[in-house]
Length: 113
Length: 112
Image (cartoon, rainbow over all chains, first blue to last red):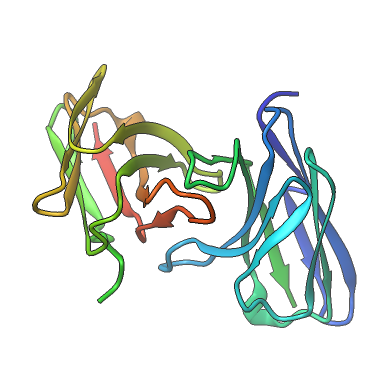
């Protein structure tokens, strides 16, 4: 595997479900990111991790819970989501957090019913 | 005023046309500029990046930065149907603790 991978690619869940999104980067980077991409809106930065430490949380509701066990893996735990949370969730990585080029995974398309 | 402005389009051109995609920005501290291409239902992929002002060329693609006008452009020569995608500009201050700021993206359709 090369680059940034994400699983699952598609997810349908009810509002009472609990699910997790997984991201893995094979680039030797130190920083990882979660973004939300909704139609007609710019990419919304959700969380930033640098060397496994969370450095940014952009006022994301607590129903989204990130986890970064090491510099290569990033999770986004989901619980009691709302229909408006349906979107493409993108993971990205970069060498560091100095505004470097970020490399994106293919995304998980989430539908909340 | 938003930090980065990008016309969402859609922009429709015939095959072989020259395409110009643009972004304007307000933060004069931005010095690192990128263009990403995103195909439908895929993640964005880095297309080009430039540091500070000037031009950079890669095949049919040319990225141009005019810091005095706070304006960046991506030109696509001899456009192909495979260029049909959404193009996002992104920029940063290139300092510790700063993030990439993305435009909304411009949707391009090239017809054969």
